[in-house]
Image (tube, rainbow, N blue to C red):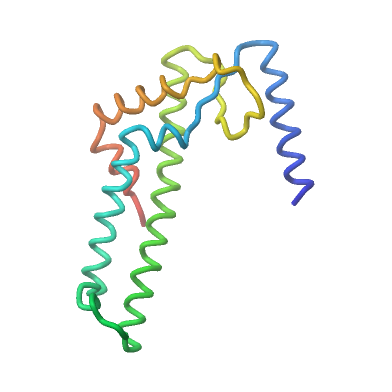
Length: 157
């Protein structure tokens, strides 16, 4: 595990330094973007819809207020929780894919040659931080393409 982590850092460092001589490298905090943009609300709405569907499927409303559950009820509750966890994982994966596409479009639109996720940056001057601009871009894209983005986030099989 330690060798793999070292290798990742080494490769990222090589990429970083090779590009640093050719062009400016900008970074974006993707997690902050998700939390401060309309993306978080879309994800929550998709998850709520999926949770409501699961609750209906497993008749979770019947279990409210019960102090003890019989075997069938416990199995339904577990299936509900497993379903919620599955949907959360898939929505998270889908958000990552949507954010990657948006980040690529953002970079192309504004002529940035290299943008990296802040999580992989050890240090960079704040002048290279494009997070606030990316948040505005994401909100604009959601306003223009909300139903398409919701479909991409909620596309779970």
